[in-house]
Image (cartoon, rainbow, N blue to C red; front, side, top):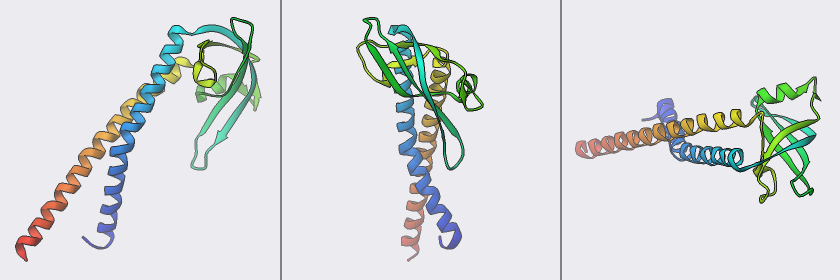
Length: 169
């Protein structure tokens, strides 16, 4: 193949290879995050956390993500904080209006033995985050399957073409 068709085929091969590798990686990390959320929901301790701040991040190619900073006292009276906890856009629209926080506290669950943001979930947003993780498992697995099958097809077609060229030569 030469020209524009060869160039496009080459790009598709790379895209399929990236999907074959990146899809399962995405599915694994989404599954892992979903398990983290389920563990905290099941074993976590409830607390009322004060919202210390919120951050909106706009990406160049579109899309906006939100995160919040929390502080609370644990069951032993110790001060704890968690920064940059991701929240869904839907939840962010409920607690942020005109670039101002409309809430000062939020109900959370946390694991007492683990510090940092990975041991905290916001109760009003945990279900949405778990649903997103569940969807991303399927997206990653689907991308992986398409990538593997497509890469195998391109490899097989390329091999047949080279065998045919050898026989005609």
